[in-house]
Image (cartoon, rainbow, N blue to C red):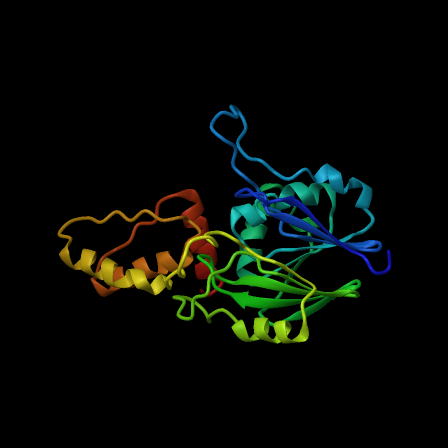
Length: 268
């Protein structure tokens, strides 16, 4: 087993949601993300779906940490459920930690969970694994790809990403680090494939600003903007343009209020 690395998907393969991956070498295992899914309408009485964490019972003594790429529900939502079974340290960005701690507080787990906050390009040694956190762009802020050095080679786990050189908040995706690892050699690439079969590329979030400015300039009455609660970049655009046109903003929705409060508290 000394030359074998096991990559075990517990969810998120061929489906949207429940993203969770285990990486095992000998008697040590990392868990990458712990996401929830949302059931079909025919699953009456079922509110959420989570990966089958019972599979990990035989590896209970091997699990060293949970590493989160970002704070979307399909990567973070099942965190309380896995921590109730396996109380191990959690590594994530500052904003992801804010979302995670809010969720852990709801489940009375906050005081019992060790959450390590990391920054882009931080390198953390977790047992036999060395993990570098690479900044990537996404609809959320403070998102990471992971470069995981193992005794048999490097694994790149991208998490969710898009190549946005002009994000609304924060710095652009760190393509230099990806290039560096590519030149050094990569054992396996575990990549987000959403829209991978669609030709072209995803435009920058800034591409929506002119349309918003036109709508704000023409509207005589109240404007209602619908957005995902986690789309912090989009929310920032709306707030900036509202200020530009001297309009007040009312934020509605439990999740959106929580996300705006966390982003404001952490300085985003």
